[in-house]
Image (tube, rainbow, N blue to C red; front, side):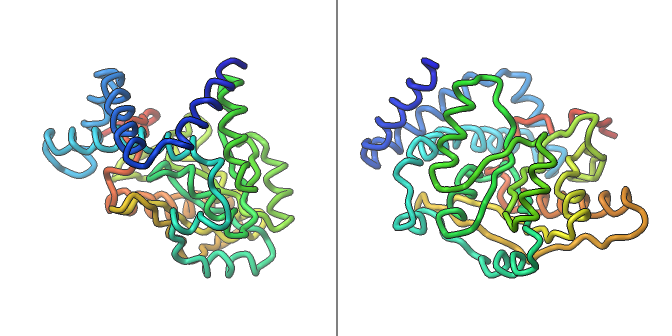
Length: 288
């Protein structure tokens, strides 16, 4: 647990560090992180960007570098989570479309938020939670016990709760209680996913959002967070989406998964520098 206490100490340091010092620290951490990324991973990301946007190698390299170095400031923002509260959260994150979330909650069947590893996604849940929404983050359990304890403890400082992505029954129960489940659905789902088009190429995609929404009649609200020029953030919530339930479950789940994936793609097209391009999104597919 030494790592846990080291992270707590680092967090306290950044909680008292002045703004200008935090800015340069974030840039330095991001630049160091970029240097540590293996060349093969950079090459993979550049190739994916070139294919996805039809741009040259130089622009693709700029995009992947920008999308990676920003993690320095993202990390510092997470380390400063103990300072977030109901009085200051809206100074950091502007929420647009909260009426759509209220509308979805009014159905009484819980809500699934479909989002992506874009912007500082770790801020989305706390921002909604501190604004009074009953948010539950669906997380991947970290292999390092100390880091897993640290990040989940910080996520829950805002009042949101956390469940692991393999706890399906618990998620269904929470939807029945009217909770909001936040699901990241933009990463390779391996053999457990279904193949839908992402930037024109089949990609294995998690179907949890669509499957649970179909089962419970739960509305899905796409939501994304982006960084503003002044260093703050904007969280944008969209109109609720409902699964049209037919006798063909697989077709229903496929249709809504493709729809959500297309929404994510459109967001990335608008903010390419804010997505996690180092992830091998098309690992389980054959690019043709």
